[in-house]
Image 1 (cartoon, rainbow, N blue to C red):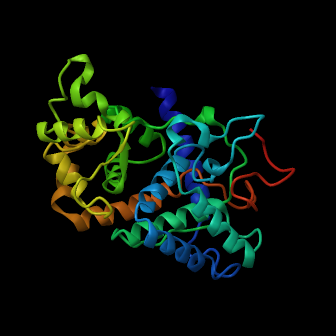
Image 2: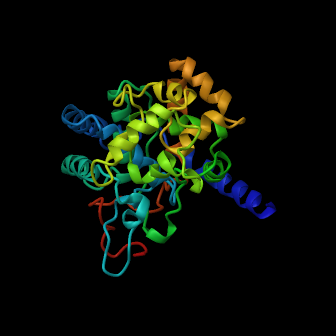
Length: 323
């Protein structure tokens, strides 16, 4: 335990120094149209597909939780190694083509200026706002990482306890309240049946459904999950495309689909936070904006560290560690 605490303190002090070099409007003098270009591309995609908000949120979280917010998740696999996007938790991450489109747009007017890491962060912010979520400013100035290794992907899973999940969030410098807040992104998310199938009929080998799930919901999900091969299900069964607080309301009434989501409402340490968000949508929005800004500063590369990729899917030639 002592070793973990020491590593955490050292990690966070370094992160603090790096994130302090980020600033809102970083590209104003060097590429003043960058943020508007990215915003326009996200708007166009959202007009066609409102699920892009969930896709970008997931990409952003998965990127920041491995080596920090450095766009390492975007690197394509090579014969010589397997990149982060090939790890099992990332196989269903999508939205890479939107990041490619935004990168091409900014490269056309400002070559080698805007990082892929900042494009992910800005696109996610814009998608949240379009989904009726909070509008917030994010500081920019991140640089792109030089390493992408599937063996480093270790993300909290849907069947973990609150304590297990929080250990991962805490290691990134996030508080318990921030964890509950960020998991609120599930209000626009989906999960394939394989991630919660056990809860529907044979919870922990009992031969029965999870007693913490509303029986009516369990019955409905059994029908859905039995119709085709591992179909996706909305985690918010009401306002599935809106960044609102309905996700928390549903967990309060035993209608959380993922085990970790339901545990948030049941656990003594997180239950009061869930109840607070369930009854106060504006408080959730304020907390979500703050937590997203903090998450986006996780282990960032700044200054001369890393690189500014020309192509978000590949390291620049003759630079960096090809791992």
